[in-house]
Length: 149
Image 1 (cartoon, rainbow, N blue to C red):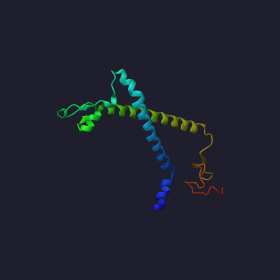
Image 2: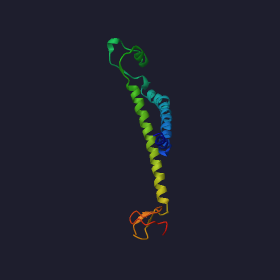
Image 3: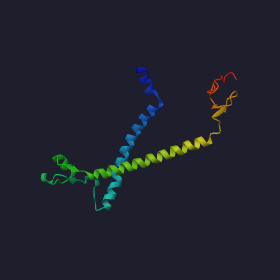
Image 4: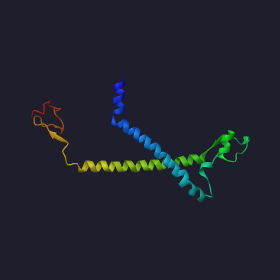
Protein backbone atom coordinates (compact mmCIF):
# COMPACT_ATOMS: atom_id res chain seq x y z
CA UNK A 1 0.00 0.00 0.00
CA UNK A 2 2.87 2.38 0.79
CA UNK A 3 4.40 1.66 -2.63
CA UNK A 4 1.11 2.45 -4.37
CA UNK A 5 0.83 5.69 -2.42
CA UNK A 6 4.38 6.74 -3.41
CA UNK A 7 3.61 5.95 -7.07
CA UNK A 8 0.40 7.98 -6.85
CA UNK A 9 2.20 10.99 -5.36
CA UNK A 10 5.06 10.71 -7.84
CA UNK A 11 2.72 11.01 -10.82
CA UNK A 12 3.06 14.26 -12.68
CA UNK A 13 -0.62 15.15 -12.36
CA UNK A 14 -0.59 15.16 -8.56
CA UNK A 15 2.53 17.32 -8.40
CA UNK A 16 1.08 19.68 -11.04
CA UNK A 17 -2.14 19.95 -9.05
CA UNK A 18 -0.25 20.76 -5.85
CA UNK A 19 1.79 23.45 -7.59
CA UNK A 20 -1.38 24.89 -9.17
CA UNK A 21 -3.10 24.95 -5.77
CA UNK A 22 -0.23 26.82 -4.12
CA UNK A 23 0.04 29.34 -6.96
CA UNK A 24 -3.74 29.75 -6.94
CA UNK A 25 -3.78 30.52 -3.22
CA UNK A 26 -1.03 33.11 -3.65
CA UNK A 27 -2.84 34.59 -6.66
CA UNK A 28 -6.04 34.80 -4.60
CA UNK A 29 -4.25 36.86 -1.97
CA UNK A 30 -2.90 39.19 -4.65
CA UNK A 31 -6.38 39.67 -6.13
CA UNK A 32 -7.87 40.28 -2.68
CA UNK A 33 -5.24 42.94 -2.05
CA UNK A 34 -5.93 44.45 -5.47
CA UNK A 35 -9.69 44.61 -4.89
CA UNK A 36 -9.63 45.83 -1.29
CA UNK A 37 -6.65 48.18 -1.57
CA UNK A 38 -6.73 49.54 -5.12
CA UNK A 39 -10.07 49.00 -6.88
CA UNK A 40 -12.67 49.51 -4.17
CA UNK A 41 -11.40 52.78 -2.61
CA UNK A 42 -11.84 54.78 -5.86
CA UNK A 43 -15.21 53.10 -6.48
CA UNK A 44 -16.25 53.96 -2.93
CA UNK A 45 -15.05 57.54 -3.41
CA UNK A 46 -17.18 57.86 -6.56
CA UNK A 47 -20.17 56.54 -4.61
CA UNK A 48 -20.17 59.21 -1.88
CA UNK A 49 -17.09 57.97 0.04
CA UNK A 50 -18.49 54.49 0.77
CA UNK A 51 -16.14 51.88 2.27
CA UNK A 52 -17.59 48.60 0.99
CA UNK A 53 -15.79 46.44 3.54
CA UNK A 54 -17.63 48.19 6.39
CA UNK A 55 -21.16 48.01 4.95
CA UNK A 56 -23.49 45.93 7.09
CA UNK A 57 -27.11 45.59 8.18
CA UNK A 58 -27.95 45.13 11.87
CA UNK A 59 -30.38 42.26 12.44
CA UNK A 60 -31.04 42.80 16.15
CA UNK A 61 -31.40 46.52 16.84
CA UNK A 62 -32.58 45.91 20.42
CA UNK A 63 -28.90 45.47 21.40
CA UNK A 64 -28.10 48.93 20.12
CA UNK A 65 -26.63 50.32 16.93
CA UNK A 66 -22.93 49.58 16.56
CA UNK A 67 -20.69 52.35 15.26
CA UNK A 68 -18.86 50.03 12.87
CA UNK A 69 -18.73 46.47 11.63
CA UNK A 70 -15.80 45.76 13.96
CA UNK A 71 -17.83 47.14 16.88
CA UNK A 72 -20.77 44.87 15.97
CA UNK A 73 -18.48 41.83 15.90
CA UNK A 74 -16.91 42.78 19.23
CA UNK A 75 -20.32 43.18 20.90
CA UNK A 76 -21.69 40.00 19.29
CA UNK A 77 -24.49 41.83 17.50
CA UNK A 78 -25.82 39.79 14.56
CA UNK A 79 -25.29 41.61 11.27
CA UNK A 80 -25.38 40.89 7.55
CA UNK A 81 -22.01 41.98 6.14
CA UNK A 82 -23.04 42.68 2.57
CA UNK A 83 -20.08 44.99 1.94
CA UNK A 84 -17.51 42.21 2.35
CA UNK A 85 -19.78 40.02 0.19
CA UNK A 86 -19.52 42.63 -2.59
CA UNK A 87 -15.72 42.59 -2.23
CA UNK A 88 -15.68 38.78 -2.38
CA UNK A 89 -17.87 38.75 -5.51
CA UNK A 90 -15.50 41.18 -7.22
CA UNK A 91 -12.52 39.01 -6.12
CA UNK A 92 -14.23 35.95 -7.61
CA UNK A 93 -15.03 37.69 -10.88
CA UNK A 94 -11.44 38.86 -11.32
CA UNK A 95 -10.02 35.40 -10.54
CA UNK A 96 -12.55 33.70 -12.81
CA UNK A 97 -11.72 36.11 -15.64
CA UNK A 98 -7.97 35.52 -15.27
CA UNK A 99 -8.48 31.74 -15.21
CA UNK A 100 -10.65 32.06 -18.33
CA UNK A 101 -7.88 34.01 -20.09
CA UNK A 102 -5.28 31.47 -18.98
CA UNK A 103 -7.33 28.51 -20.26
CA UNK A 104 -7.97 30.36 -23.51
CA UNK A 105 -4.21 30.90 -24.05
CA UNK A 106 -3.39 27.27 -23.19
CA UNK A 107 -6.07 26.00 -25.59
CA UNK A 108 -4.73 28.25 -28.34
CA UNK A 109 -1.19 26.94 -27.78
CA UNK A 110 -2.43 23.33 -27.80
CA UNK A 111 -4.41 23.82 -31.00
CA UNK A 112 -1.41 25.43 -32.75
CA UNK A 113 0.78 22.55 -31.62
CA UNK A 114 -1.67 19.99 -33.02
CA UNK A 115 -2.04 21.80 -36.36
CA UNK A 116 1.68 22.33 -36.91
CA UNK A 117 2.55 18.70 -36.19
CA UNK A 118 3.32 17.17 -39.62
CA UNK A 119 4.41 13.84 -38.22
CA UNK A 120 1.96 10.98 -38.81
CA UNK A 121 0.37 9.50 -35.71
CA UNK A 122 -1.05 6.33 -37.34
CA UNK A 123 0.05 3.73 -39.86
CA UNK A 124 -1.50 0.77 -41.65
CA UNK A 125 -0.76 -2.79 -40.61
CA UNK A 126 1.00 -4.49 -43.57
CA UNK A 127 -1.03 -7.70 -43.04
CA UNK A 128 -4.61 -6.67 -42.28
CA UNK A 129 -4.42 -3.00 -43.43
CA UNK A 130 -6.05 -1.78 -40.21
CA UNK A 131 -5.10 1.64 -38.90
CA UNK A 132 -2.88 1.41 -35.81
CA UNK A 133 -0.81 3.91 -33.77
CA UNK A 134 2.59 4.72 -35.26
CA UNK A 135 4.41 3.47 -32.14
CA UNK A 136 2.55 0.15 -32.03
CA UNK A 137 4.74 -2.96 -31.94
CA UNK A 138 1.84 -5.39 -32.36
CA UNK A 139 -1.32 -4.98 -34.43
CA UNK A 140 -4.42 -4.79 -32.25
CA UNK A 141 -6.56 -6.37 -34.97
CA UNK A 142 -4.54 -9.30 -36.34
CA UNK A 143 -1.97 -9.45 -33.48
CA UNK A 144 1.01 -9.74 -35.82
CA UNK A 145 4.36 -8.76 -34.28
CA UNK A 146 5.32 -5.60 -36.18
CA UNK A 147 8.92 -5.63 -34.92
CA UNK A 148 9.62 -8.67 -37.12
CA UNK A 149 8.09 -7.10 -40.22
